[in-house]
Figure 1: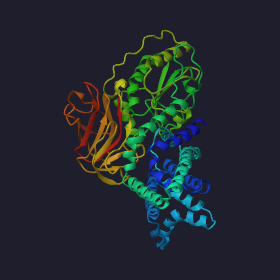
Figure 2: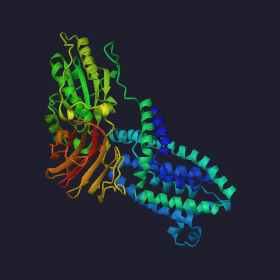
Figure 3: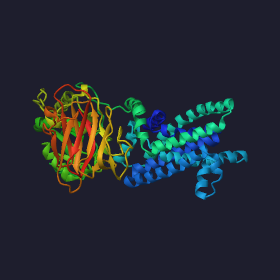
Figure 4: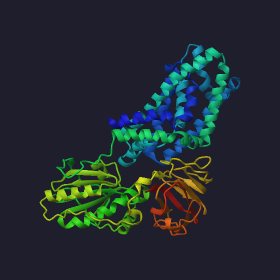
Amino acid sequence: MILFLLAYLGGVLTIVSPCILPVLPFVFARADRPFISSGLPLLLGMAATFAAVATLAAVGGGWAVEANSYGRLAALALLALFGVTLLFPALADRMTRPLVALGARLSQSADGQERAGGGTILPSLLLGVATGLLWAPCAGPVLGLILTGAALQGASVGTSLLLLAYAAGAATSLALALLVGGRVFAAMKRSLGVGEWVRRGLGAAVLVAVAVIGLGLDTGFLTRVSAAGTASLEQGLLDRFHPAADGPKTAGALPVEDEMPPLTGAVAWLNSPPLTAEGLRGKVVLVDFWTYSCINCLRSIPYVRAWAEKYKDQGLVVIGVHAPEFAFERKIDNVKKAVADLGIDYPVAIDNDYAIWRAFGNHYWPAHYFIDAQGQIRHHHFGEGEYDESERVIQQLLAEAGKTGVADRLVAVQATGAEAAADMADTQSPETYIGFTRAENFVSPGGSVRNAPRVYSAGTPGLNQWGLAGDWTINGEHAELNQPGGSIVYRFHARDLHLVLGPAAEAAPIRFRITIDGAPPGDSHGADTDADGQGTVTSQRLYQLVRQTGAIGDRTFEIRFLDPGVEAYAFTFG
């Protein structure tokens, strides 16, 4: 129930986001009509269409995205026609062809039917359907939680209901705006007697909005002026109602949180035969949910490795549950290589179907669950940090299990490269995805084109904005470079910059060169670059490209690829 409330409140907040602003002209074009017979059907049609399209996106993947793209083009054409008929009503009267007449009726039939004593519901509903096809909400925290849950746990009727709750929240905001705006609109018409000019003004506004959406400016300019505020409001809701609780703060009596669920459903096990909850009775167990391109997971692994080594002879069993985020992390050979590269010798369950993930009710990378010798979950921790507390829990559970001589000293970890701890006190840049499914703050002029090659220019990114230059194809998870010489530019504020990269299928190693503020990185190069900024993409993984040694400030990062075929997935910082 809390998640449904969150979805609804997240939808309410879209009234001040770029997801809603482009469709406002279409909504207010009916502000002078009766709300029940005109405004309400429009909002219902819009909300239902969005929920249906978003459900398809959650279920279907690429084919649904394509359907949405074609629907978007059809809606743009239909609403452009609607705007023209508002701007030039005489032109609509002369349109006799059936297809054009349908578009004209969307804007004019309400008036005609009202004068004839008929209804206005159907034309408003059709207009709402067309508007709903244009409403492509950015994946802010609340909507992202819904769609991520659908991806990880399987889309269901619950997913559709959550999306409908989100859409209902947005429709509620628009309804309030329409009711208030409608009174202002009607009063302006009565007092000034300029109804025809108001009609033409709305027509012009509709055409401008169509042009803004068609050119992709709704995800550029509008994002800059309003997305950050909306995202922070939504994130506040998530933090308030769905906190990443970190369990008790230590060493007193640890509560029993739940029974350890089964470990069935993994597609493979590494470093061990399959383990079972029953077979682990008598052992203290640490279950670590991770994925190998996740920077937060990589920074916690040195501690997990150290605990596994230190306490294995005293009865601790560490199990890494690898639950993939990107498609390439589902490849068992990729996980095997990552496990070897990271020096992981404890058991790893490859949970490609998220069976163990769902059994634990997990939602986070990394996530640590601490289980006592009786098979009871006694503590959990989500995310990085609080390593001393976690080790104290291990020591306490071992002592409860009757183990003697458990050292009370804590491990000393000296991690390097991407595994080294982040400088969170001076990190102002967020994780940023490049594939269109979760991309934000993309500023290349003209916006992005989905699933089709396009030559981009980088533009001038502000802080935490990015752009592409060269011939790229942007897919749901990543962007792929079609011709050599393409680049990615990001304006960031952090000590470290990482980028998840990989060669396309059967591609040769891909050379690249990075710059910071137009110059080679020098001593600020990362583990995967040299002082001249040169490096090579050889496999699908996270690459550490920058680790600054001097003062941290706003910097412009650019990576230029000398060979085609690279796939770029996500930036992370630390």
